Each structure stands twice: as C-alpha cells, then as structure tokens.
Length: 488
Image 1 (cartoon, rainbow, N blue to C red):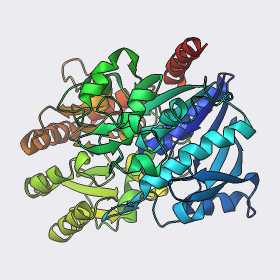
Image 2: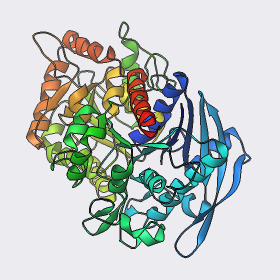
Image 3: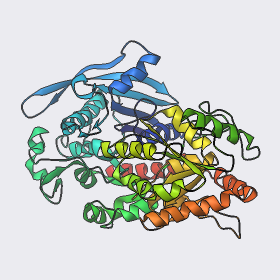
C-alpha cells in the first residue's frame, strides 16, 4: 500500500510531546513492512533550523500550490525533506503562517489563526499528492489534520484522482479539538450543510476534531483503554456521543517506542550505558543528571524523582503543588523539565524558589536533558488527570526508572503495580485524582527503594518489557486494509 501521514509534528524536526515521537516511529515501522510511506508536516521555523543542518538550500518538490480561502488565496510550496529510514519527508512551506516562534501558540494561548494555518496545511497535502504520488490512504492525526478527511468527502468528493482515497484519523488527545466560530465554514470554503450537530457544529462552534471523527473511514486512538474512556462523559471531552456512534469504527492501538532513540545500552545523550545485567552505569547517569540541574550533594540513599512533561492542566502539575510540603520532607530530590501554559511554568518556578535544593526545575524542552532525566532518575512521576497513552512511562521502564502513575488511559494499561509477594510488576499506581493517593503511591515506592535487591528486581521487570512499534504497526496495517477493502 501507499500511505500518506499528515501531522502537525514529527521528531526530530518538530515536537511538543508524544505525537512527534509517534510520527517518527510508526511510519518507519510501516515502511519496514514493505509499504510506501510519506510524511507531511508544516515547515515551521523549528523545522527550517533542523533541515538546514542537513541541507542549507531548500529543495523544492513543488514550487507553488494555490490554496483558496473566502476572500483571498495563499500560496504554499512543498519542500523535499529526503528519505529517512525508508520514509519520504515533505514539508509544507507557507512562511506567513508557519515561520513563527512556536508551533501552536505562546504560553498565553494558541495563535488565533490556527484554523487557517492547518486548513491550508490539509489542502496543501491533498493537492501535493496529486503531483507527488496519490496514496491508497491518508492517515491524519489529531485536530490539526482532522479536516483532511472532511475535505476529501466534501470539496474533493468529485475529484477523479482523490475521491476514492481512504482516510484514517487517530485521536491522540481529545482535549484539543480546534474550536472556532461558525464563520470558519465560509472562511475554509466548506458547504454550509457541514455545519449541523450531526457533523461539524458543536455547542455553537465549528469543531475540527468532531468533523474529522464524522468523516474519516476509520478511527483509531492510542490505547485500548483510552478508546473505552473516550466514549464516556468523564473522558470524552464532550465528544463521547459522536464517538459512541462510531464505536464500531474505533480501534485502540497502543503506541510504541523507537528503541533506536530510547535505549540505555546505546543512548548517546546519557553519561554512561547500562543493561539489565549490569546496572552500574545508572549511578553515573544519576550523578550527571543532578549536575545538569545544578544540584548540591545528594546522598546515595535519597531518591531522585523525575518529570518530563508538557505543563498543562492535563498533566496533574497542580497535584505536585499540593503534595510539595510533605514530599520535600521525604529523602528525595525532584527534577522537572517541561514547558507549556504560563500558569504552570510560574507554578513550578515558585516551587523551586520555595524548596531550594529539593525541587529543581528547567522550563523549556531539551532533548538531551529529557534523556538524562529518564536515565538518571530513580522514580518517574506521571500524575495525569487523563493520559491517552503516554510515552514517558515506556522510556522510564526501559531505563530502569520506576514509574509512579495515575491509573488512567494508557498509564493504567502499561504499568503493573508491584507485587511484593510475587516480585512482579513494573511500578506503582494510584486510582483517584487525589493528592493524598498520589503521595501514598510515591511513599510506597520510597519504602521499596530502601530495599536495594527488591528495587533492582522491579527495575529489571520494567527493562524487560517490549513496547516497540512492531506489534502496533501490524494492527495499523489491519485497519488500513479494512479501509482499502471498503473503498474498493
């Protein structure tokens, strides 16, 4: 099959979270299965800086594509990003929309013209494939590309080249939906019969993600548990009704990990390599991490707690604040890396000021430092309100860093509670979104941390888990084949 991925992120060029890692890993694995795969992402400023390291000159695949809007047209180019592990990369270049400081907005909020930015991106991908290779199927990801299947089934319905192409939409996080005024229908040139409660209208707004859910041939999400949760009022983010209607077409497929990038046996970002059989390098990684965060002397019997996270309401940062006082009385040091909403960035800064030497914070995202946190921490914290899949718990387990997670979504599916009698399990979980439950889970971990033989058994249990992309990719191929059969 020939498959086109359309996404707003792809590591290493542009990433803010797990989506970028998925779009790096999944297409590569599908290509290894013998399929022809292309990936399109916007040519953000960050992508330009990365791409220039490989080639200082822009390599045009298509020099100009006209994208019409209600009262004007914009013009985009398609840049050839080259072949990477069997995957052809393309970048959609429209400087006035994508040459900005950040991918989606500032700490104060999203860019108000994101509807235009990603509407253009979706149409540019469709137009580009007519010249660069029409796929059997388009695979769109999250709200930023959810309009691609909508365009296919509306404005491109009579296009003889594209009309029978399949479309799969993966919902990575239903908390982000792309909600805009009703006038967006006209601005993007959609027909007004799209704007009904059964299609794109949602509580008086044009909802990009809902429209994609309605018009895609098949839907996937990033864990079986999250596929179930999405159909409930608690986790469906007001889209549970439309998702229940499409339950027969919704498949939960657990994300995978690219162990070429995340593996302590050969990771070039960490101070020392180590294996389950020889864990001695883990101590050097811990010392290197503490040095990178400017920590003072930390006793060997103190546990280093790590976090690498987007700073948003979803990630449970408020619970860190609520347990900070009793947590810092424990024999621990907390190191946290992340950026996001201004409120939570300031909250972490204030905690670092209030508890110097106990809470160490770095605002921003740094790939090398993220690897150091995964490898150098003893315990990794993920107190998410909800977590569709999560990748950090996979990385943590591979690096022998024990996860403490809230039992929700993919976290509940992938982390097994430590059983002290059987010496099984890979981490510690807590159920309700309650600070005391979170603190109690950390304290259970700290109690075991003092028992070094048992702790090393727990570390090795996690390191033995295999969350590579092989099994998920095979399941995606099954979904693609179902779509192809339906379209033919």
